[in-house]
Structures are given as C-alpha cells and as structure tokens.
Amino acid sequence: MKDLFTVGEMSKLFNINIKTLRYYDEINLFKPIFIDKTNSYRYYSTEQFEQLNTIKYLKALGMSLKSIDYHLKERSIDNIMDLLKNRKKLRKKK
Image 1 (cartoon, rainbow, N blue to C red):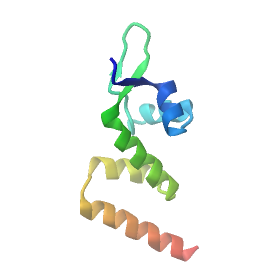
Image 2: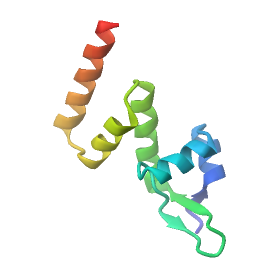
Image 3: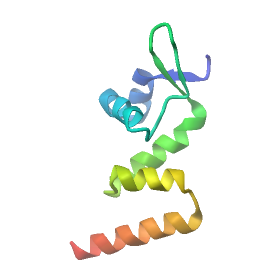
Image 4: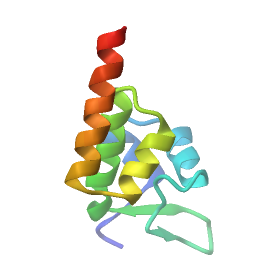
C-alpha cells in the first residue's frame, strides 16, 4: 500500500475538504481505489490524481457535479470541447 493515500492525505495534497471527498465517493463521482474492510479507511492511488485534478478544474470553471460526472464517464476530445464551449457561452452571458 505504499502508493496509496488516505482521505486525509488526499485532502491535504489537493486542498479539498475531507467531507467533499466523502461526498464524491457517496455520489460515485470519485471513488477510492481500495477500502480496507477492517477499518473502512478509503485509499486512493497516484493514478487517480489526474481525475481529481480534472474534477477540481471543471468545478473551478463553475461546472455542476452532474456535468463533471458526465465528462468523466464519456471522455473524449469532442466532449471536453463541447463542455468548454458551453461554459464559455454561459460566462459571456453574465
């Protein structure tokens, strides 16, 4: 488990509230790679860093968690371009 990180460690590394990480797990947006059955600790891998960075970036752009979830499940260049174009249109209206 050397390359695994607890919720607390991920929280510190990515400056995200622990409750937010638990909520992302609850709504199936960002699931831990491993849950220890003896103590229920959640563990994340280094391979998941990109996904969490993507979530943070899209959230900072003001995208809803539903849109972010769709993007993560339907990853493609066309999909991300559409998301960013739609976000740009919404920002211009403000």
